[in-house]
Length: 250
Image (tube, rainbow, N blue to C red; front, side):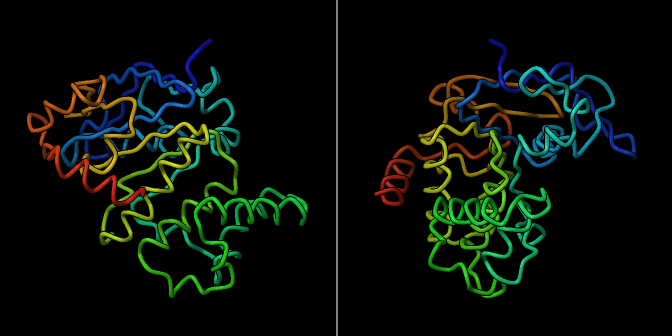
């Protein structure tokens, strides 16, 4: 059986001529949890934006379940749900429930189906009791969880997170991390970029380092992480990683 995500010879150049990606080849299995790390400008976000066709490559392609993204762009964007670093840009509803309903409403689903999806998505991120709250009054962690709920309501097979812990306080990180781990336990395929490896490494199946638009290391997290500092990423503290993840998830 083919991998769920196949990336073949993917290259991209920005309008100013800067190389964004240079011949990326990756295969990601269904149900896996892949973490991508690297210094700023290494190509992480650019790669993620190719997964559902937000960027058209200069050469190469991405296939989802063997179907090229640009052969079925609408299908790709339903299959791949992306949570951006700037969650404010993803929140469009006045209330929590309105925001989560926005995507399903645009799919022209029935009222009953929309209500079912909203309830399920809010339950998955622990916001069911806040459904009538105004989105402007939410904390940073709650807004990130709301963005995840909005993506979940589209019922994607693949969830992509770009720096999900950025600009969150300790409590917010714990809230978001717990939801991400739970989604993986429920069988979702996860692809996540982060500089904070200590937050997620314990739960990941695979760690990829990028530099200069290329994949420079790819392997099991416990071994691959030892080279973090070579690629401009802070090496996690083993003791901190154990203590922080245990406290968040207990």
